Image 1 (cartoon, rainbow, N blue to C red):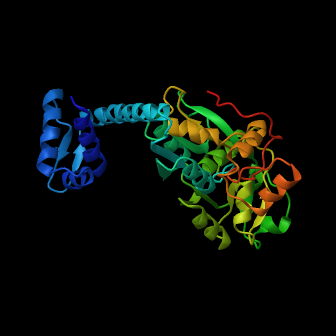
Image 2 (image 1 turned 135 degrees about the horizontal axis):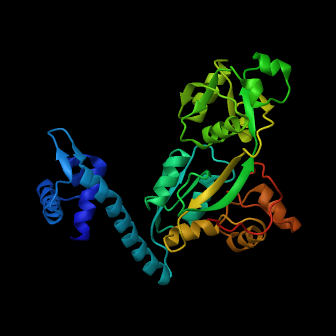
Length: 344
């Protein structure tokens, strides 16, 4: 079995089509087909079900795909580690994130990373937190910014980013808005809810809050993007329970605190694999995510590469510690202290 066989197999599995996979790999279709047949002969089992329109994985193919992706990721990591020893960071940084994640400004973080490491190719994927955790655990993502739950794979570590309470958003004409008081899950019993797919962090946090109080709710309007959720609430079609920083995205809506939810909060983290599995590019990005004392040292060390703003310039002139622009100002549970350490 050769690495190229695994590379060809993964390309066909991802494209579900031999012609498209051959174009992506820049090889002939006949050569690609021969490579897959050689792999199937060695494993003594069909890996694909072929039709005139597409190809799908057999059960054996699905089992091989997970291992093939892991092997290819380890090979890439080996190449990147050697390049890092030589003093040049190369390779690929595969990052995942939820929409509107709290605690980090992803575009500014990646812009700074690119200025520091221009030879690294950045790939960004946007999914729900459950899918992101699975992708990091499988080695298909280097790290991800997501909502942390106990259901995440055990081999993942987490670096805390921020935590904040949940807030109820409703139309100004809604009876809850006219009352203008903090709400409990019991106050929302019977309401029509707008929410995200169950895979999303805000949905998982809301489900946990209601489960903790024994209140059942039904999500009638389920969406996969933030603006659709806000539009539906703006038309008074339902109410939404969201992280508190969402209230700034649509000032016309009424935001009411949600209380009596026990330990349930919206807590975002950077999900990373074990130290041995982390790529050099991932470790370099994690170095930009420090807090507290490490944050101040990082600002001094990276000052020439960071975007210069009027606020950062004023902070430098006054001698105050400035916050890197990628550290979003979402509320945290406590005052930042020393640099957070990834925890299992």
